[in-house]
Length: 153
Length: 90
Image (tube, rainbow over all chains, first blue to last red; front, side):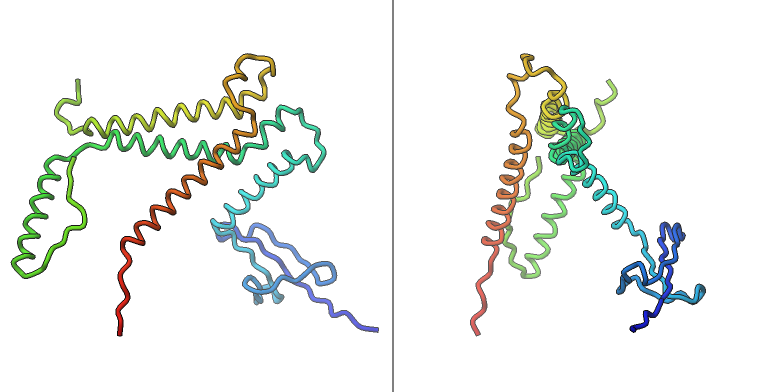
């Protein structure tokens, strides 16, 4: 009869450098995830798995939770039998949020273009500096092929 | 009026900028009514005649996004093609 070697290990979840969750597991009832997060915690004297919550993981977790909620409502996987208006409302939601985000970006860009003040003096100064630099470089023998005309206005 | 001597954006910039703001407000309002308000309105109300069937509220932005991607890709392709340098022959 084969003997099962029993291992105990701890799983720690870390958020903002604090351990927010810790649990003891054994190989009798779990799969052991290795690679990357697998360590030996010398204080606990047993193998420990750390899950560090980076911003990326946080975002992915949030997005996937929302995605699962949307999927449940749209495809009626839990047979919640919501009123038809709410189901009609839910299924275009991802596209709707994208369009709203696009509109907000467009409005922000447009507003900043409209309220960005012209700096006449700075423009003239820049033009003068460009001319000076071109003449200086011509004197030193550099051929200048301008790819685009410098246009102010 | 407090803005006489302070520098301001020139007419064209203002027109384009506020035009963009107005356009996005219009688009947002129309799309919000289409997606969020219409399901709660009786199907025999006259407002439904101003909006396409609901499927188009997903298809049209998708097509617009595809066209945008095509334009961006074409632009990049044209610029890359223009700037290609002939390889040196050894």
